Length: 163
Image (cartoon, rainbow, N blue to C red; front, side, top):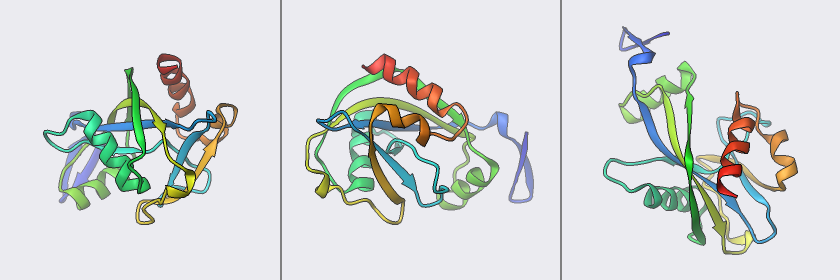
């Protein structure tokens, strides 16, 4: 459970989780918006979201992240889940986050929100420095897009809580 940063071994279990937010975005036709990050394989997907800045409120962080990642402000937060999505990062992600942000986290602990997309699909303009592609899918297709450990199980729990 050790990782080496600046030639110093660190026990990952002693690292904090990064506070994050995730938006389970749906449109008027009950399609879910998924994003594929630039560093993901072609089969890996997730809901949009990101990190929370120091002093930032969760809802503000989510709306900021959605605008930054997707280029639209046409999102309405419907409900916050009572469940947190917590997961560990691979060592490569911990190291890259340290290099980019000069902070060390072991993974992310995300607040999850149900979000309604109120605009037209044509106004979604993903940030190509972060997102490789987006896809709108029905609930029945979600399972096929979630390849990370426990991702589908956690998604089902969150959707049960939110819907």
